[in-house]
Amino acid sequence: MKWLSWGLVLPALLACATYQNQLGDFRSALRDNRPIDAAAKIKDKAFKEGDDQVVYLLEYATAEQIARDYTESNKAFLKAEDLTETKDYTSVSRVTGSLLLNEGMVQYKGDDFEKVLINGMLAINYLMLGQLDEAQVETRKLNDKLYKYKFEGKKNYQQNPFAFYLSALIWEANRNWDSAYIDFKKAYELGSGMPYLKEDLIRAGLAARREDEVAKWRKEFPGIKPADLKTNGEVVLVYQQGWGPSKKPHPSFPRIPKLYPNFARTVRARLEVENGNAELSQRSVDVSDVAIKQLDEQYAGMIAMRAAGIATKAVVADQLRQKNPLLGELAWLASNIADQADLRQWISLPATFQVAKVRLKPGQYRVRVVGLDSSDAPTGEIMDWTPIKVEAKRKAFLNWRSLN
Image 1 (tube, rainbow, N blue to C red):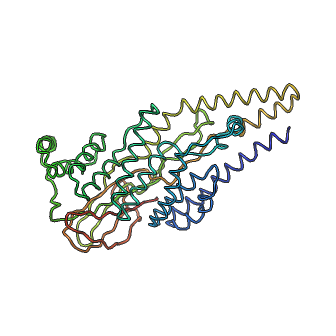
Image 2 (tube, helix red, strand yellow):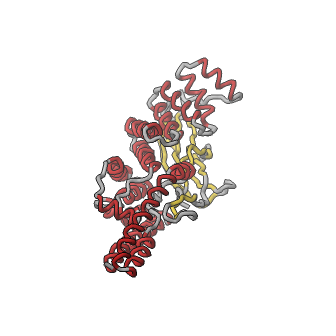
Image 3 (cartoon, helix red, strand yellow):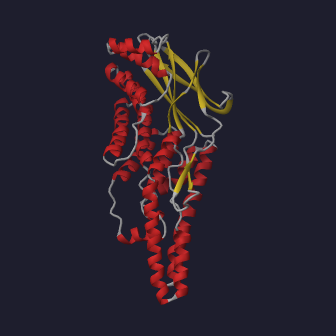
C-alpha cells in the first residue's frame, strides 16, 4: 500500500513537470521567432491521443499560424475544436483519481475563453487564405458559443466585439453593406472603443441607406468624415499582440489556478506603406482581461471541487489509518502533496487583438509592420516589407504577431 500511494503520486507530479518543460521549450522557440521549430517540438504530441492533446493542438496550430502555414494551422484548430466539443465519459476511477490527487489526471477540454477563441483564430486563417465566407462563419460561431455559455450555462459572459468588428469588415469586403453596418453597430454597443468605429458607422450607414441612423451618428461624432471606398481600396492589418495571461497556483488557495497578465515590450503596431502612409493599430479586445474575468467567474465551482477532493482524501486516509496508522498518515501527506492546481492552458494566445487600416488608390504596394512600445518607440520587432495588391472597393488583409 505504501508503494501504491507513491505510485499514484509520482506519475502525476512527473506528468505535470514534463508538460511544463515541453511547453517551456516551445515558448522559447516562439520568442526567438522560430515558429517552425516551435511547431516541430510538439507536433507528435498534438496528433497523439492523450489527456493533454487539446493543449498541444492549440499551441501547434498557433505556431503554424505565426509561420503563415494557414492550411496546416486550420487542420490543428479544427481538430482541437472537435475535441473540445466532444462529450467524454470519464471513468469513475479517473474522477476519483482527480479528487484524490489532482485535476491533471482528467482530459483537458480547454477553458471557455479558449474554446471561443479557436473560432477567432480560424477566422483569421481563412481571411489570410482569401476564404471570406468561411471566415464569416467562424466569427458567427464565436459569438454563438458565447451566447450559449451565457444563456444555457448561466455564465456572465459578454459577446466579443472583435468578432463583430472582423465580421463587419468581411461583410464590407463582400459588399453586404447592411450586414456590415449591423455588426459595426454591435461592436460599438459592446464597448470596443475603437476610434475607427466612428467613421465605420457613418460610412456603412450611408452605404446601407440608413439615413436616420447616420444623422444620429453625425450628431454624436461631429467632424467625422467617412472615407471614400468607392474609388480606393483598403489594407487591413489584424495584429495579435503579446502573450495571454499565465496560469499559476492561486496565492490564497494553491489547489486552484489564477491567471496573471504578462508584460510585453511591444504593445501596438504601425502599419507602414513604402513612401506613403502609416497608421497605428487600435485595440479591439483585451484577451488577458477577458480570460482573467472568466476564470474568476469559475472560482466557486473550482473551490467546491477541490474541497470535495480534500474530503475524499480524508476518508481514504482514515480508512488506511484504521489498519495502519503510519500508512494512513503517509497516504494523507502524499495525496495532498500531489494535489496541485491544474495549470494546463493555451499559452501562446495573444494578449490583445488590434486592427490598423490604410486606404490607398488601386495599385501595387509594399507594406510592413513595425512593433512599438508604450511610448511609440520601435522595439525591434518588424514584419518585413511585403508586396500587396490594392483594388478599388476591396480589402487586402494582413496578419502579424508580436512575441516580445
